[in-house]
Each structure stands twice: as structure tokens, then as C-alpha cells.
Length: 178
Image (cartoon, rainbow, N blue to C red; front, side, top):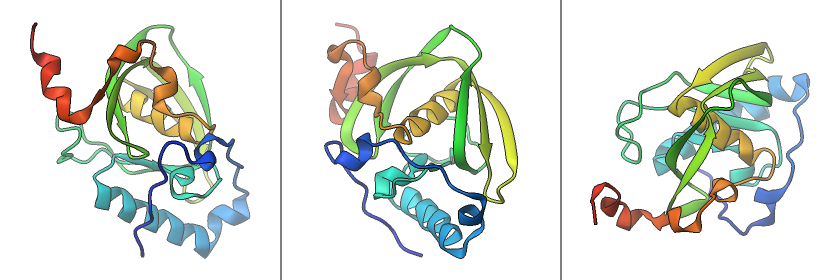
């Protein structure tokens, strides 16, 4: 296993449309190692999700796990581990919810992003089996954030007001009144 370098905003790979995986690729030893490396990388840098493009691989693979002890997201509920290939997302509501999002590819910044509250994601799991999951709340936002990476988007693309893009070191001001 190995920890990979995270690409930063500005690297052109992060803006490309990722290619889907074939069933043969999903079942390969190379892909199994990649998944293991991605989880190790994500844990090493304190993330809750990581997409293959963020480590320079232009393929439709992302992993997500909300641990119980996340330093970056201490109030987030925990989740199971998700391995997601070739996702298709459907929005189940027009109702939006907003969170202060951060990204391993945009270190040191947070931005307030509003996204659909309820979604459905159809995808292939690590065994190449078709899965479908309906999500809402924070986990729905995490899925949308990570899936964006597979389609050349970064959370900053969704910020409606640039005044809502801040340095993490200044986040302590968010809960203070003026």
C-alpha cells in the first residue's frame, strides 16, 4: 500500500471528464490495490472522500467514509465505507441545503455550497455489482462533492457568493455575530 500525492486546484486533470471502468478493470488486482491505496491516502490526510482524479487517475472511481473521529468534520455522522465506480446521480428534490465544504485538492479553504438535499446514486461497487442508494443530509452533500470530481468539477464552482469562500484558519469567525 502507498499514500499518493493529492493534486491541487489548477492541475488540468481535475477539470477532465473521467472515463468509466469496465467490469474487467473493476475486478483486476491493480484496481483492488488502487482502492486500498486510496483509503490509506484518505486516512493519512484526514479526508472523508477521495476521487481517483485527485491522485492523477482519470477514471470514475471515488471512495467515501465518514469516520466517527474526523478532525475536519467533527459533527458529521459516521458512515459505512463506500467504493463507487461509474456513478449516475439523480436529484430527488429541488430543496437545497448548505454546508461549508472543504477539499483535499483546495487545501486551507472552505466555501459555503448549496446542493440538493436528497439524491439517488446508481453505481457499481468494488465487486462490479450494481448498487443504488438514496441519501439526504450531509452524506448527500459528500457524495455530490466527490462525484463532481469525476466530471471535472470542484466545489468552488458551486459557490454563489465569493464572500462565502474563506480560509479554514478564519472559520472560527463563522459562529460569531458582528
